[in-house]
Length: 251
Image (cartoon, rainbow, N blue to C red; front, side):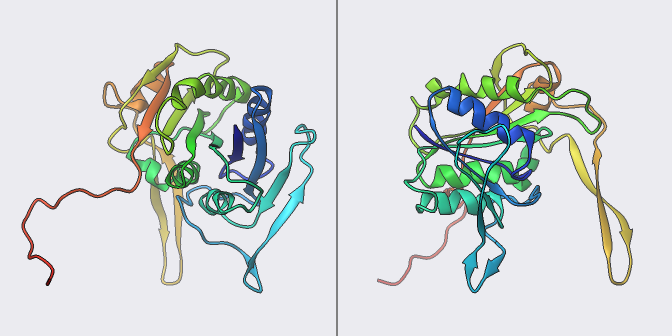
C-alpha cells in the first residue's frame, strides 16, 4: 500500500525513522512527511507556518532512510495527514502510520496527542491508520523503536480486513519483546498530567508530570505496564441522537 509515515516529534525523531524503515521493509510505498519542529500536543490542529498563504514544505534527505522521499512540513501532523489526503505528496495514502511517539499515548488524554490526531485525520479521509507510541517514560535508557515498529507491522493484515477509515491506537512496552497484542479500553485519563507551575499577570508556565501509578484494571495504561502491546480501536468524530426532545425544523 501507499503509506504516509508522520509523527508529532518532528522529522529528525528516531521513532519516525524506525516506522518508515519497517514499513518499507514490509513492501509498502512509503512517503515520510513530518513536522519540521516538535509538535507534541497539537491534536488534529491544521495550523501552519505560511509564506504568502503557502504552507512551507522542505524536501529532506534523512540519514538512515536511503532514497525514501521525505518532507519537513512547517505545520502539525494533523495538517500533514490532511494535505497528504489532498494530494500534497502524490496520490493519497491508503495507510497512515503516525509515530512512533516518544512516550505512551493511553487513556482519554489521547485527545491532545498530535500522534493520534494525524491518525484520526487519516481515517476521516479514508485511510487505514495506526497511531503508535513507545512507553519510554520520563527518563528512558535504551529505546526499542524497531521492536515497536515491527509489532505494528504485524497488525496490518488484521487492520486491513476492517473497513477503510479504521484507526488503531497502539502502545508498545519499551522492550525488545512484549507479552503479545491485547485489546484494551482507554483509561479514564492517562499516565501523565499537565500542571500549572507558575501564574503571573502576563504569563503562566505548564509542566508535565507522571500521575501516581494506580491504573484502572484492564485499561490500556494497566495492560501496558504489565508488558502487553495494547491495541484500541478509536472512534473518530461522530454524532448520536440527543437524550432530550427538540422541536422540528420548519418545513
